[in-house]
Image (cartoon, rainbow, N blue to C red; front, side, top):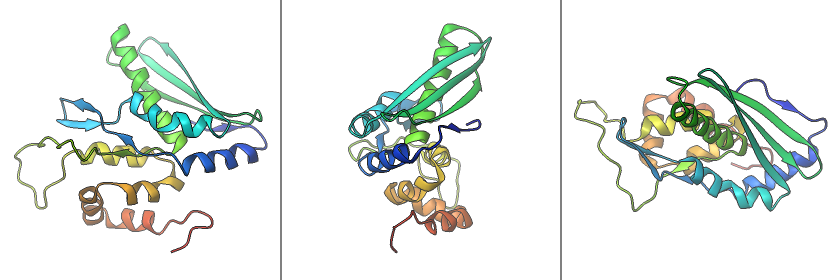
Length: 197
């Protein structure tokens, strides 16, 4: 995400977003990535997670795509009914400038930006079994879908990472704690204002 721009002040937006985030559920990993043999939360799932909490608190999210050749950008604007706003732009390079490639990158950028702005974490559906990642021996074995989960965790706003980590699949938390202990401890030591123990 490029530099975030904001109205001045943003007190009403911040209060409304805080209330919205208290009710935002995780986005279900409802789409398959055959290349990585994993599942991820698609754009529709992210919107399902945020639509009612945002609108119920006077918030709206607008996303504006643009492209120059195969360089694609999506500007995301989080607005409050007071007129206060936050906005930022994400940019990525598509594999070519075909409509399909551009559309794919636009969806990707919209998904990550929406999740980042609103503090959405991906969650697994209990009814869905993860597909195996492969047979390369590792000790310990990396859980299926861990890479995508870690990418999503890193894309989450810093103040929301602890809540996302706590709500994540226990296999991911355990592997993250084992392989990235310093990062795990840093996130777990983070407290949001007014949070106890």
